[in-house]
Each structure stands twice: as structure tokens, then as C-alpha cells.
Length: 586
Image 1 (cartoon, one colour):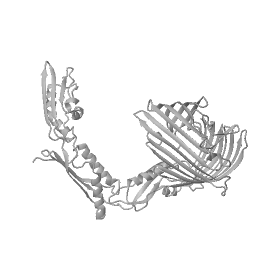
Image 2 (cartoon, one colour; image 1 turned 90 degrees about the vertical axis):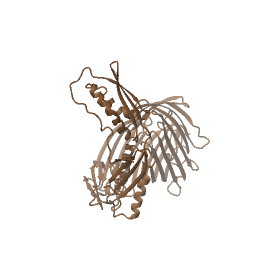
Image 3 (cartoon, rainbow, N blue to C red; image 1 turned 30 degrees about the vertical axis):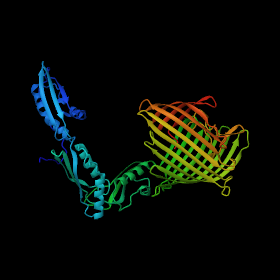
Image 4 (cartoon, rainbow, N blue to C red; image 1 turned 30 degrees about the horizontal axis):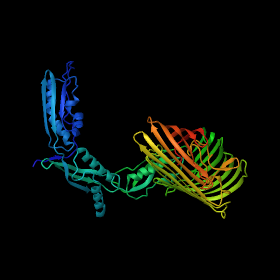
């Protein structure tokens, strides 16, 4: 029985002919090619055969053409072998008729060879227990991508070997290598036996951090972000996680993390961290415009290393037409468990739809991110002074523990095209604990993205909210509901949908909003949108009467997210409004 043994990869085009250099012939020979081959193999042959490559060559003559025709069958067999066809029938002939040359090439690939016996082995790692050896081998066999019965293709064989090796390299055995690989072809049985032996090398474990480039901030900033414990098994995913945490940290402009792999020293491998620090203190000034709150001027201050403890102080002063605020937040370094603790203080004055509120908020918050889920717990104290045009205002206070959960399951956080965003909130207050009224508040918001074809997109959005209380008096405005504006019900003024009180619109205890939007991307950066929104806020479920707004808009993929410019018509007010927003509020 004839057997062929393939030990290493071979280029299917190794038989390519290099034509000798000679002077260009102005009457170079031309010829037609009549290829008789199944459609599945035609592209492979047309892309790689020298007959096609040199067909328009300026130095082609009869001698060169006959040489190409003679070598064509051998080239065809090499090309088809890379696709698993080891017994093809190939016939090539050259003919001339009336001064015109024609090549006829007939190819019958035959049956594709299939994978027969697969022999997978792992050697090395002698310090491992037999249970670990068996577990590694079982995982290798379970993940093997070219099983018995599959059509054998050289590219698939190489890919399967790389994937098998990668499984060791990424987890515990970064010095692993291919010890031996064989693909043995049996043309009579039309099968290929595969044998692969991997040398895992020693098992590696992580050691301590070695930090370079740290000057402004204490080493504890990096140590708190480090998910790796000394002595634990090597895993490339852990190194990437540490690097991602450092790059996402406001303390650093850049970070690189790696571990040097030396098979002679596999235990307690040092983790080398090289970072580029951000400036500790910055002051920013800016101006802006919102179709909700009007023109705005803003000043921001940031100190990333307060008192030399890597505490982050962020202060902001904003002055807009309808809202003014001043406040600060003190964030503490991330804990080893990934928790972020902060303290906040803020004063806000707003004048919207006849209601003027002045609110002082003091709060503490703990938040953490686990995969796609972000959870936050907070305790805030509100002291609010309300003035209502044409009605009696009041002073309100509340001590409010809160919970918030957000899930971001989208393909791209900046420009989502499919997936969903979900946010759920719960707040509570009790008169017995520094609050003017007891209440329980629940709120939920969801946005769903669905791709329609190559250029279309459907976006569905909804909001629901309710406050359980004897009445709305005594409840701070932040825990009541109003709607209308850029990212709620377009076609209506900012927070103009709510409860009528005197000459003003104030918040109610119920909220319902729904929106449907279709976006058509005309270019990679620009798109057009059609949308319809409906919603309302009221003080009881019976008085919740959604109003409708609809219109069209332009979309631009800006560096900070999708920029939305919408022209909307409010069906209830019969008015047209311009709305401007950036991104999605999650």
C-alpha cells in the first residue's frame, strides 16, 4: 500500500515557474484557457496556476507556454492536495487553430480525503500529578477541531495544531511547543491519519509585581487593581485583565503588563508592569449648548492624588439657562474586590416649567462592576426648597438608601448595533429616619438594538416608574417623575409632561415612556432616522395619558458616541421642536 507522510506545511504554489529575463517582445503570444473543473475548485486553480498568472506576460512565447502546460498537472495536484483531494485526474493539452492558441485543462478532483485516526498526546510537565495530565489530555481532545470523519484540508490541519498549542500557552504552560506532528495520507483508503504531540514544558506560577514608571502615585494604586495572587497558576487572561484595569484607571495614560517566560525558572515569575502616569491636577473650562437646559458654561477641577493617598477629588461648577450647580465628589482607590467607594456633595438650582427648586445633596456610594453588570448602593440626604408659580411651595427633606443595577449587553458600548441596555433602580425613605414622608420608589429603563440588514437599525426604548406613597407632598423632586425633552418624549419641551400645579408643571408618582426609532446609515459616519415617542408622567395611574411625538433626524458617529439632531412634532401641542443629544443615557 502506498502512503505519503506530510511532516510540515508546504506551500501549494511551490511549483510556480519563474520566467527568465529577456527583452520584451512586442508580439508576445496570447492564449485562451478552457478550464473544465467543478465550481468549488475553480477559484483556487484560477488564483494560483501559473497558466493564469503569466497569461498576459510580455515575454510569453511558444516555448514558455508549452512548459507551463506541461507543469500544470503537477501544480493542480499540489493545489488540490491542500484541499484534501489526493487522487485527482488531470489532463492538459495545448492546441493552435488559425493562429490562435488555446489551453484545455480538465480536472476531476475525485473524493476528498477524510480524517481517519487521530492520535493526540502531551508530554512534559513532569511535576504535574497524573490527574492533571489526564485533565489536560481530555481538554485537548474535547477542544480538537479536526475530528475523525472531517474532510482533511491542510489549512484546517494547521489551524487545529495552532489552536491546540494555544490552549496550553494561555493557561499554565506559556513555554509549550509542538514536539511532533504528522499527517499520513493513504490514497487507497482516501483517508489521512493525524498524530500530534505537544510538549507542555513546565507549569508556571505568578510572582510579585515589578513596577516601572511610578512617580506621582503610591504603589498601592496598582496593587489594588491587581487580580493576581502570588503563587497562582499562570494565565494570560489575568495579565490582560490587569493591563485593562490599569488602562481604564484615570491615574495612567498607558500601561503594559507582561511576564518573562524562562523554562528554567517557571516558579513565581515576576509580573512586570510599565506605566505612563497622568497629571495629578487639571483645570478645565468649557461652554456648550443643550436644547433641554439652554446654553451652558462649565468649570471642572480634578485632583487624582489628594493628600498623597491617591484619593480622587472632582469638582464642577455649571451655569446653564435653566439649571445651575456646584458640587464635588471624593473617590477612594479601587479595592482588591473591585469596589469603588465615594462621597458626594452637590447644590443644584433648577427653574423648569414654573417650578424652581434648590437642592442640597450629601451622599455616600459603593459601586462595583462584574462583567456586563454594574451595581451600586448609596445613602443620600436631600434638603430641598421648592417654589411653584401660582401655588404654594414647600421645604422637603429625605434620607434615602438606594440600589441601582445596570446591564450593558451590546456589541459596542460606544456605537451599539445589537443587544440591550437595562437599568433598574429602587429608593426608599421613612418618616422615622430624617424624612418628611415615607415612600418607596421603583424605576426601570431599557433600550434594545436590532440590526436590519447591512445599513438599517431598529432601536426600541421604554421607561416605567412608580412611587408608592400617600401623596407627593414632602417627596424631593429627584424622586418624582417628569418627562419630555431630548432623550424622553421628543416634540415636547424639557420636563413639560407632568402634574399641573398652579401655573407650573411638577413631578408625579407615575411614569410611562415608549419609543421606536429606525436608523438608516447612508455612509459609514452619517445616517438618517425616523422615530415616534409616546409618554406621560402623572400623579395616579388613571391620569396617565401618554402623548405622542414623531419626526426625523440626522445621525453622526462622533468620537464620543452617536450625535443625534432631531426635528420632532408634538401631536398634543401641535408644535415642532429641535432636539440635540449625544449617546445613550445609561
